[in-house]
Image (cartoon, rainbow over all chains, first blue to last red; front, top):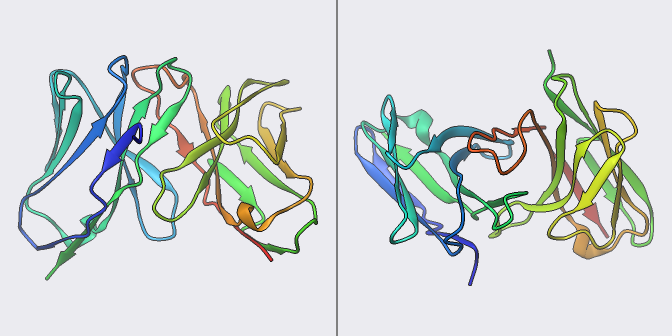
Length: 110
Length: 116
């Protein structure tokens, strides 16, 4: 079983739609969680960290469910510019490295 | 302030050839990392460094060597390239260690390597 698993998608949504991605992780000792965004043929960039209490940044909301070992990302009012691959990232058991999911592809269409 | 830069951007090698990928950062970050990214897989950590003069193995270190002689530079070497090393290589740096609750890693633009 992969340490971090994501639905690869693609998720095809119209502009203005709300879309949600989930990511599951296998290591219950993981402490840090993040969502990164990667545009086509570009480098990953941090979108947001995920805190136990959940956090929101504009149209983006991230949630953590430790009991079920998953994190989620909700995007409201999708824009064309949101089209990208979203990477779920979790710190490893020993806390000395990050483990990246393979990513979920989002395509927002007009 | 260029952030993280990588050279070269593209390279084609023949099996058995060697090469060095250079990563440089101007943010004075202590921690640096080399990843590879293959289709359908997440970024996988090859080697990392927690400071000048130190390196450590990541998840997939075989076939690669690294050096961190200067704080701002992290070199990745392939001594004898194999087709399985065809990939996109990303360098990253961070001011906090990977286990930190706010470990933002800043990535370079990547190097696309093809080994024939």
